[in-house]
Amino acid sequence: MKKTVAAACMALATFASAPAWAQSRDAEVTDLQALRTAVKADKRAFVAATLDLTPAQAKSFWPAYDAYQRGLEAANRIRTLALEGLIARDRQMSDRYARNLAADLVASDEAEVKARRTLYSRVMRALPATKAARYLQLESKVRAADYYDLAVAFPLIH
Image (cartoon, rainbow, N blue to C red; front, side):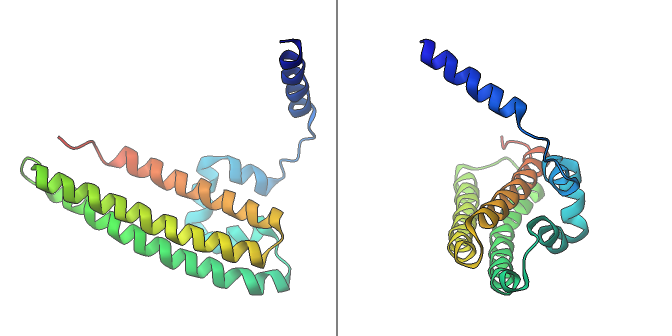
């Protein structure tokens, strides 16, 4: 018990005493509204500024980035079509329609996961692990904001 308390105190002290490394671009990444604004304005420029790539890293990274963005667009198209159908629906949801909607949403998720796995492999080869992980974390934050917006915009089906 004492070891657990001591470990918890040590961890708390470590995090509390960590230097404030929140540079302006780091603050943008942690502030959800600033992240949305930066991504909406120019996601590619935001990613470039956040990662601070060397020319050699950029040459390897941007093709992986572009391929991932195309994969996301495909996954988003599947999701958008399913949700547009839900919005346009003017009658009660049937079980068959609900099954199809659920299948389309899962297909969208699977397409996104496939694109993300490919991205992971390519980015880990293209960048040092810390920059690769930073970019993957950044993409996760962007996707989380997108998912939040979808969750707010679309009600549960009845």
